[in-house]
Image (cartoon, rainbow, N blue to C red; front, side, top):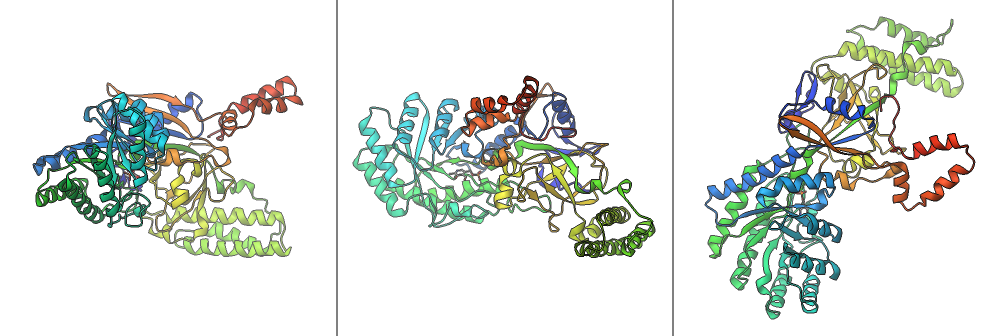
Length: 598
Ligand code: PLP
């Protein structure tokens, strides 16, 4: 039976039991139970389930990995971590995250003024805040204010101009100066899709000459004691460990050189994010174990500190994807199977049909397990010919419809005959026999990284898992955009079930969508963020909390600066009261499809 690679990507968070996907935690509820409970409350359309216990699992894992390595190597530095807000700033994610991280003093990283406001408001006192990204004077001023509020905040400079601004604000205000970090532009770049975050051409960071200048500027202004951190980030989703080792050596030596130059309060190396997540359903792509990763960090930094005779630095990480990706699952109904209308009862056969139609009829009646493949290919050829005949005016619309129905019926029958436990036979079959599944979501809103960079995500049905999926599947979203499709890829084939949606529901789960997707998602066609639900476990029982419905159409329009009062007035003008009431109700719905199985 197809398990959709759950043993590869799911890290035991989800399991298949009794033909459905279950959460492998506490009372092990199935995803479909939760979907039904929410839909009974009349929330239709795509649903975004968040699992705080999985955030906790990842935070525990991160701290345990490093603390194990620290114990093993008798390392003197301390491990600290912050969550980079850019990866997911939404309240239904951030509030549980902060709670989960309390016992470790897990902090936040901000990369913009808005994110810094969030960090200043919600970060627990005593947990670190780091500030990255390009900063203007106002942003640096904000960091000084955060320091005055009592936050343990480090401003990581991306260029000398930012240091100059820090010096200005320090002189102009009598606010306390935050700690200062220097992002270094490493010669060694990363691996994976975001490797350009590192390397000598990287967008961020100071060259060695600039680092020396920065230190001199700090000394001249009696602020060298504020320099506490060296920072680098060589890219997200590192799939190999070697670039990290190289970067660590480089950053470790810069740290040690600065210490030996007199940076007495410099005490930390921040290695950025980059811990990868297994997104593949087909084969393992991660080429290192997480413990190996942590051990390498500790071992390398220990050696450099020993070689250069300096204290072992504290370590900071800013892993985002690793902490958040697994915590969110999008579940949404299939609305339609493209070939659903091709059933026998729609045939309009005549007393005398064109010869190729008669042949299709014979193929359909005579097909068996031995002839399945051959007849299927014949039928596809016949359909091609019949479509050409239609274009030339030799057959009519009824003939064309009969040809389409018969060919699709033959394909279905052939697949049924060919149904085998391994899908090799099906995989070989022509692209033309894919089934198109219309799914109630927007790829642009919910899987922007698929649209933008063809990022893979685990996709599977959450029920029917005790039956063989027999259709090679392409997924269509509901946007009016032909890019809103996850096409069938024979190298990474998605097989789904053949079903009659008038008789049964079918939901697809898109996993690992907790990192970046929520916030990168765009409102193409004005589809907004899906309805969110937090799944909490209390005394072994599951509770669905903080339900946040997808935005109403009227609110979406207001968000893009329409005058909604005017919209209502114009719509009302030529309508009687009752019709307008109905229209108003629609205006207060969300924009996903709602009827029947949606
Ligand atoms: N830190 C910095 C400076 C980043 O730019 C990023 C992401 O681009 C991260 C941390 C988070 O990386 P990841 O989500 O791969 O852990």
